[in-house]
Amino acid sequence: MTAATDTPETGERLAEPAPAQAAPILPGFRTVPRTGVIFVMHRAERAGYGSDGQTWVNLGQGSPEVGPLPGAPPRLETIEVDPSHRAYAPIQGLGELREAVAAMYNRTYRRGLPSQYSAENVCIAPGGRAAMTRVAAAIGPANLGHFLPDYTAYEELLFTFRGFIPIPILLEPSEGYRIGVEALEREMVGRGLAAVLFSNPSNPTGQTVLGERLQGFLAAAKRSRCAMVLDEFYSHYLYAETGTRGSGRTSPEGVPPTVSGAAYVEDVDRDPVLLVDGLTKNWRYPGLRIAWIVGPRSLIEQTASAGSFLDGGASRPTQQATLPLLEADHVVAETRAIQSVFANKRAFMLQRLRQLGVRVESEPTGAFYVWGELSGLPEPLRDGTAFFERALERRVITVPGVFFDVNPGRRRSISRFGSYSRFSFGSEMHLLQHGLDALEQLIGELR
Image (cartoon, rainbow, N blue to C red):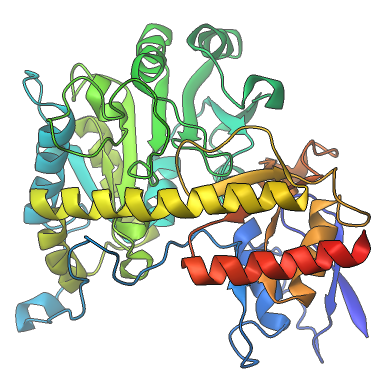
């Protein structure tokens, strides 16, 4: 017996096993959907992922490999709990960690600039979603722009906090999922946007706003009195030769290129720019749940206040353990290792997907995803949801493209991304090989 369950983003029906006794929603409560990737992982677990003793390949979840990499610093293996660490940490985060985050941004992006970040410009949160939730809670009544496609978890975030109105900004495949400065400024002014939220590099397309274009985005935001909220969790994963250092005009020589809006902020306490990052991707510690928000002191105070009722703050022992990870030599070595290893995996996945008939409209210049168009595959694999279901049968996890058509409140009934899928090359190379071999066999049987 099966029961139809709505996907969180689109309302399309997916069949999954019905529980023996479905618990009713209590009076006064609503059904809270899982975000797209979490929904996908839940379905995979029900199909046996993690419990059936078989080899599964996770091309879906946005998790990097967390083990040792050639040239990377030794991995953190233990966290000591001093008796004094058992107490609550400050809601805004430990002062020494906030200072370390500020120092990292200053040395990487703001050398020689008169305006420098301090601990007062930093707020520590227990993970990236908690950081974004704090930011959302601090946004007042406003029109908030967001790009399509973008990160799946934005959908419920933008729906739950109803003090602002989410306004989609469409990115076109024909333009490489990129938008120019003038076009973005027209959106800001014409739609009365008071804030714009986007991931850079983009999740899922891997496109990256760099150099003069990123500088232009921030300048347009100032002119338009529009805040920019930059999700920079993939900012160390850069691959393309762009002709400019990703980190911009102040990056020291010998440091691998990264990208951040911090390079183009003129006044750290006045420019309407919030940066969100953490250990999850760029340090490959998703389980530690440490993230930070960097921006003007007045806004940081508001995000700290939001944390007082949303999450209560990050773990004190984990914050203490994070300090060595932010030292200059550690950051440089980890970034260099990431870019070397993940560049090879990127090239491998692009080659294999194209051999399978998956069309890649724009190669990723950042992050660790390939945004694939499926219309060249045999039926029924041309639909991202059907592709996901059939791949599960081969113990391979993918994410349907419709999940990235961020649609708060499901106000739109048609998705542009039904024939798309996101493929992650976060896993180890041997698993990528195994998973793509399984997909090749599946596609070959249907041709």
